[in-house]
Image (cartoon, rainbow, N blue to C red):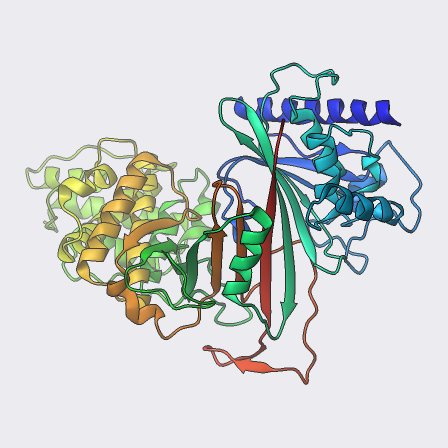
Length: 586
């Protein structure tokens, strides 16, 4: 058995290293299968991270979880499982999300574990920490890891331990990203994650082992002094520091009815401070605060729906007339100083219902210009084909234009694009949020028309962000100006991304009316001391921070609460406790 354990550590490390090397080259692979019923996935920096709701983890990390049932059925490796070793999916026969592994698989070794705890004088802790302690500190690598959920953490630790020179791994060992295992919370502590993170200086010096528990209930009971005392005892410290964090949901879009889906617009306020005086302490005005805005265009409660509809129309540059027929909508404007081309855009948008109508309208206009029946006025700065023809008509000569193919659509696209640019300029300059120099990148006609449309899309998204902020936050002009400049800078350098979260530092005193009388969506305290990575975290939230567990829902007789939108919802709290132990390699 012992050679098999060594071989498993070697193979597991090499497989992880392969994934890590490919990720550094920009190659993103699907999760790989390990031991028939387990899959391992490398989460790259910036990708959605399942640990973010607990540890604010947003770096490269390995996630270990149960293989989805459909993949498990097609796996080439089939091993019989007894009832004790079967992996629970916490479901009712449906694979509705990530699946967890059982916290422990071997009650047969509990006696040995308890004996070991008393023999070496370690504090009582979870099984996988003891097992890892054996293989790291005492070099007892002959433990049957295959009986534990923490087996992979044990193999991960063995491979990184510089004392394990008998392993067939190239030394010095390359330090891998942290490894986290989803757990099914079936133990009394409600363990939902086990994790391991290396301690590195010039070389690998040790490892930090994490345990994360999660429980759901209508009530919670915790004392800050008890948490601090527990941390001091666990890590043999005399002094600890505390840091608080609170997140307030200032706005979240909801569906107005069953037929209209909600947009993904959210505005939250993150506040942090130190020290923490008590559990659920309200953040002091000396805190550090950040406003987070993620805005999806087309918020149904916003005033920009008309511009959104016009922008959607601009995104059609098709060659077939049927696509034009399907895309022409009734559009309208709110700006009053419309020139001839802009009024034409408005009229044609409301009356043209087919490609042939489009051709007839432009034919009539061009004929009227040629005869001199009309001499319309235009705003300066227009570069559209229609504007060129109008200016030529002032001098009695006009180019010949064949209204076929995509030319009529392009002509309509150009005048609509000019109109939207002027709308945006009117807003940003009128609100004293940006100058023409600031907007030059978004409104320049020096790029091709598709790129112009794309840049106008970016500008429209900035406008959506600002208007959402003005409607639901009502900030001071100083904050709006800073937000505008931040968005402009971002979109000069990055592609359009409506899922991007724009962050803006703010003074708590400037937004205190938004949070001081509200309950936080999330509140947590972090206790630390000594080594930076050694910490205890307690968190309370109103939504489940773990996506692979199903939690008990209160019954109809349980406490309910009337929410701000008037709906009667069950009030349930989710608590998380993160503890860790650090092991030094010797």
